[in-house]
Length: 171
Image (tube, rainbow, N blue to C red):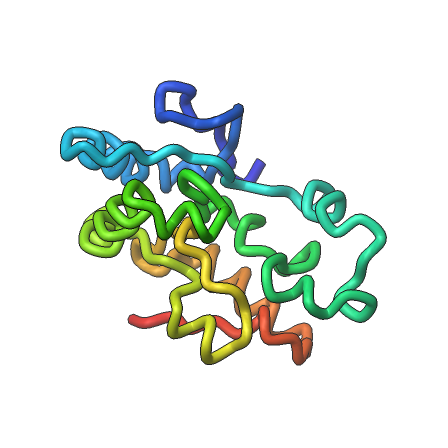
């Protein structure tokens, strides 16, 4: 189980989901405080195991469909495997340009760090590494968790030259 637990239904999830146990308190506090300020965060995705990510790729591979790497890491390389990532509200980029999307994005950019979350794929990261910007994709980085660091270092040690393996961690 590696500390992967169910996210309580009361936390505004679109379906039953799981997350790393150590993330839950910060996630709950962030969502509750956002709601108090009129910002409605809804979790639409969280922990994904390798078989689920394989199902998203179907018969595609990074070699057969390299453009897919702009929006979806292949099985074994996804941040979702860590249990430290959540997606909020919508994966539709045009929704994030709506009044509601802009309101939520502005709140997250101004406040998520107080709850130990950061946006994984920012505009700057997207430009630098050729992946899609994802306003919805936020990772928990409290203490730069040893588990997360070991997981990411394991990816680097596999020797892949795909850009999805590039990750900047600020200490």
